[in-house]
Figure 1 (cartoon, rainbow, N blue to C red):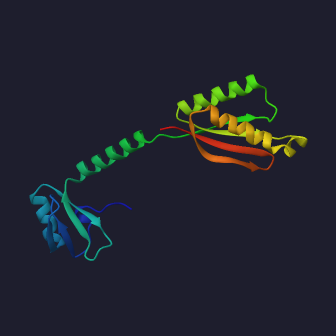
Figure 2: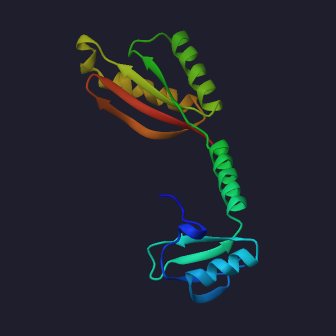
Figure 3: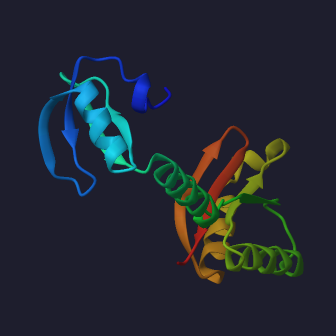
Length: 165
């Protein structure tokens, strides 16, 4: 919804707020417009649903520029967190496991979350304790926060780790 300014405001009277935020009362729109012109300001409708609508005396272009600047700053400060996935098998070798643990540590240091998956094939599903022991070993080897405890999803056991902040 577009903000109404100056002559776009069609109501007969408005509740006027001064440039400094002081309430100037309910005045006819044409008088509020005259006050804005005399002060070299704009009359901006800030609350159109109120009865009567609330309008403020301000420099509209400066206010709009400040809003855009705040939005740019907000977008710049947001940090996207991605989830990196590491897949393991229950019978993984010790050296391979250490390589995967190093990868997970690097992901956490870079500020990403790590999703560790242990996939069971065939009859391996009968030995779920191997998967939970493997995930416990990974968790104990890494300096991170356990975000999602190990749980089964179909034939896969999943755990999510988050970086320490």
